[in-house]
Every structure is written in C-alpha cells, then in structure tokens.
Amino acid sequence: MGTLTLDMFTQGLNDVEATQYRILAALATQRKGFRQNSLYPALGELIELSGILETIRQNREQYRSSLPRTLTGVDLEHKRLLFDAVPADEQAVERTFQLLTWAIPFLKELTDEGVAMFEFVHQNLTLDPVGIMPLYQDEGYVFVPNHRQNIIHVLKYELSLFSAESEQYRAMRTVEIEAHVRSSILETPEDLKLSLMELHREMPNPATFLMDTDLDFPFDETILPVAKRKLMRHLIS
Image 1 (cartoon, rainbow, N blue to C red):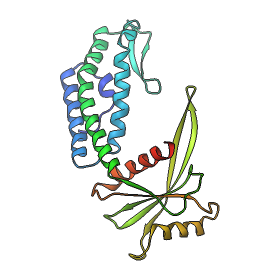
Image 2 (cartoon, one colour):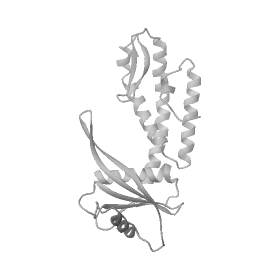
Image 3 (cartoon, one colour):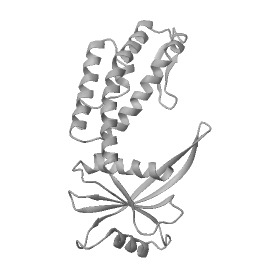
Image 4 (cartoon, rainbow, N blue to C red):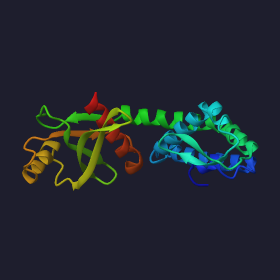
C-alpha cells in the first residue's frame, strides 16, 4: 500500500473496515521505511497529517453545530472540515470522527517512532565551523559529506523572515551548488571554503559549516534532511 492521505479519513467511509485496513497497510509501509533508517519525506508528511487530524478531532463539537450539511472536503491551511448547504448524512460525518478517534493513536505511535529516530540522527551529527566565522551568519555554506559515494555536498543556505497570520517565522532555503569530489586525502574543508571564496567573491568570508556523522544511513532520505534541520536550529538559537 502507498502512503497515508487525508482522503482516507474523509472520503469513502461506507466501508469503515476496508478503510481501516488501508490505513493500517499505509502505516506498515511507512514503518518499514523507518526500520530501514529512511525518514523523509514520510516523517514530515506524517507529522503534518497528524496535526490536521488532531485539530479536526478537537473541534468535533463545532462541526456538530454545522449539521445538517454535507462534508465536502478539508481546508488544509486552516485545518478544518468544509461543508456545503446540501442536507447531509449525519451518520457519515459521525463515522468520520469515529475513524479519526480510532486512527490518531496509531499515527501518534508511528510519529513518535520517527521523531525518536530523527533525534538519534540529530544527536549523532556534528556541526563545526570551517575557518574564521563572520558575525553575519544568515547566509553561507554547509558541507555535508556522503561517505557512501565519497563526495561532499556543498549547499548554499539563506535564512529569511516571513509573516503568516500576524506571526513572524524564520525559514531557511538551501541550494546545492556542487557535489564535490575530494582531489586528495589531504584536502580539508578549509581548502574547499577557500576555493568557494575564489569562485564567489560576493561573499569574501562566508559563514561555513561542516556537518558530518559516522552513521551509515541513507543520505537523501535521512542524513541530508536532518542536517538541514540541525543547521536551522543552530542558526536561530
């Protein structure tokens, strides 16, 4: 079975038992990925879905006052159910909330497993400055070695500030500019930084970090996304 989707919880609930089977099968697929040390994109999707479903479940009484109307979909941005003015099958809406009550503990259990694995990887990643660090660190480079392929991924990062619903948030954008193959065993991260400064003179002394680990986990699915989040935590702390 594929990944979990919101439609599983809000549509096609005439056969609740079959829906529960599909949800459990999707959870088993994601758990298998976690057991193979592969975190993303599954963990991010699972956290987002769990948050949406829990918000909807907590507002159950509000939706009761919306009846009798037909459930037509979900507003993802505001995490709420959408209804129209057509008389609804109240039992169908009730089945939706019963399914949420049944499913949320399973999602929480798997989410907790994924988060624990994330924290394990996070703790086993080292983050070290490369060369002299400038005061301005909202823009720079991060080096993330992929030991399986013997290359160093060179990412340019930039912190930005954005507003949403009267709140301000920090976000980090990364762009990979090079998959660097070491020219010799004597080459150091400082050497790589110097070569970048030669190529990109608009940043004469960029903030530069080296992120590394001894874990032999999938790079694209686990090491790299956790490394980005560790850097983000460091920069905004």
